[in-house]
Image (tube, rainbow, N blue to C red):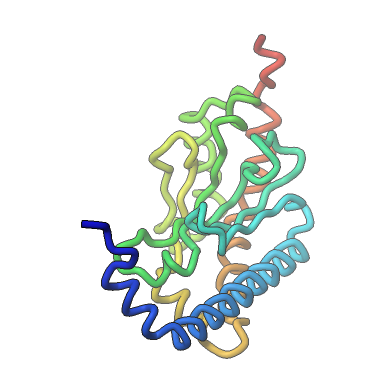
Length: 209
């Protein structure tokens, strides 16, 4: 017996094609606006922190969980899109709207390629950054800060929840959403001098050969 071309769910979709097409177009428009609001975040952060002259935002691409990050061109980059620095992950709308997906993560992150390029001592780097955080952050801010678990996760910061971000996104012109991210990046950017010192004190890959 030949296999059916469409399954039950696809047949239902076909019967509601006009409505589904309208929904599809609306979702595309929301994704476009979502991408635009992250450009506003990039503009605001780089205006306040011109030293963060490398940035990336991948918040609508299905090949990633959604992220935005800032770093410095002087820091050893693994590649153009994944520079070491301050990042927030798990931001794609599909992640934020699902109860089963992980919460957003804010952290200082360095790729394996970047760490190898400057022969970074990961355990020592985590300890140095946490010591710097203890002197730069208030007790309340430090309460949500801890060293990372994986080799590429150096320091975690307290992150907004999915529920909080969706609420801010739906409120008004999106400015409260932008401000929430800017505030968090302002906090994480206090560790930039410590990162400068960390990368400058690490021997380059060439020097270790």
